[in-house]
Image (cartoon, rainbow, N blue to C red; front, side, top):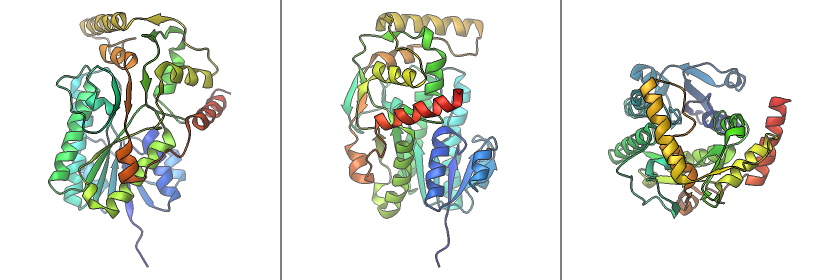
Amino acid sequence: MTTQRTLLVTGGGGFLGGAIVRQLVGNAERVRSFSRGRYPDLEALGVEQVQGDLADADAVKRACEGVEAVFHVAAKPGVWGPYETYHQANVTGTQNVIDACRQCGVRRLIHTSSPSVVFDGRDMEGVDESVPYPDHYEAHYPRTKALAEQAVLAAARQGLPAVALRPHLIWGPGDNHLAPRLLARARRLRRVGDGTNKVDTIYIDNAAHAHVLAEARLRENPALSGRVYFISQDHPIPLWDMVDHILAAGGLPPVRKTISPTMATFAGAAFETIYKLLGIRTEPPMTRFVAGELATAHWFNIAAAKRDLGYTPLVSTEEGLRRLTDWLARRHG
């Protein structure tokens, strides 16, 4: 009789973390979640919930006790706010997870990173994991996520079995970030550039599936430790087509008005300056980082994830959009 193992998901109450939790529970795993809040959805799934903050090393260690593997998903997202808050959550928090894994004898760490850690403001078309980190970042999120990823890879070199995944633009039912922001700003949105820049996205269930696969493959093949993987729908799409698809899912018309990349960057710089001078905490309508993301192509070669993890998207973009449409209809119905 084999003893059922326990797997920890940091941020298990969040969008991606919750999707990973549901897949693990579906695989009959015993799951523990570490989040700042308590979530009835997790309670209903029979998930053990440990409350605490990533910046609290003792709380993280308590969450890691008796755990075989950790999915470190929790992070501070967004493009605006004090550097210290990003560093505390994304860098200090990740280091606390690494330290707790070592102290508690955790056998595997699956770290959720981001393609933005290698974004240098220029087009990225079909690049693979060999692309280097840039010398400069236009926002605190990619900078601190890069530091976090580097810490995980350093820990892997020092003997902690770990891999990092870079999902790009996660979307789907349950989305509490991308779709709600687009729908809320629909009337003010402007296409940046000519609209032909292609990007990768990933449907929520595919992103979670890749994480579950990564843990299983790392268990089978410890030599994968220290590697990074881009994961996506494997189907680049013009960014503004995707925006329009999400707006359509919410019953809204497509974006018609345009602005040049130069004007968007200028506006972003101006807004950043004004918001900093006035101490405004809400996110500006535009930033230089967002202008760069909206104006450039960023899609990736996921051959490594296919080869090493056996990853292929289970849900097509078309099917995902149907599910998103149904979810939004129920949510606003």
